[in-house]
Image 1: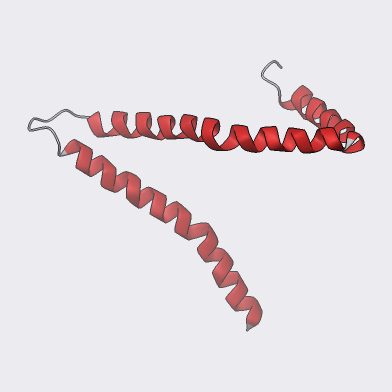
Image 2 (image 1 turned 45 degrees about the vertical axis):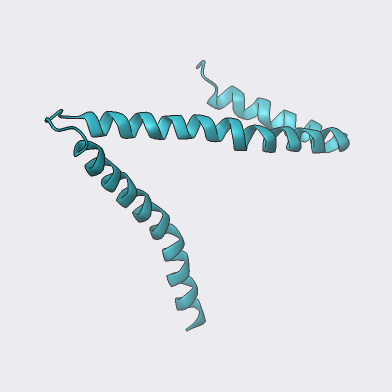
Length: 100
């Protein structure tokens, strides 16, 4: 019974963020399309894509950059870990890099 409850909770962890995100995008799309007094097909879609991209850009600057710099400072304190990390980063960059 405990495993079933755990699987249920894990399912919620997967479904809830996706469904809430889809609902918010749907809601915002409908609100944006209803702002203008005339019909402008696709305005909601354009605004939603631009807004999500802007939030992703801001998140990468505000959230990801400080975390990355903190992680790099920690690696400088542990030379062996820094060597392993840089080797793995180069290896994955070789196979998954932009140039193929």
